[in-house]
Length: 87
Image (cartoon, rainbow, N blue to C red; front, side):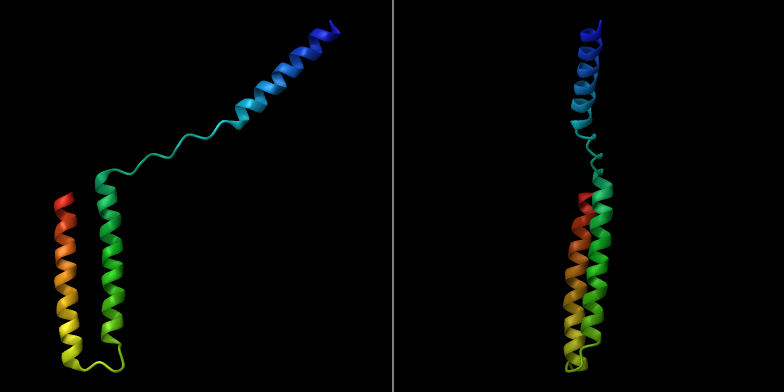
């Protein structure tokens, strides 16, 4: 009886140890629209930081700033259009 009790406790202990070693379930993957929305937010944040850098540059003239903003706006519009097509 004593051996049976010890062996059952050992088996139960090992089984709980093994079950504790299993990995938790993987988090669900985001959907395509969620990924596009995340990319859109990143793109907007990047656009705003670049815009702030261009407008606050101490050495750039108004013409240089205007040209850089025009190029930035065109690039942003193209990337935004591509993201909308991916939706």
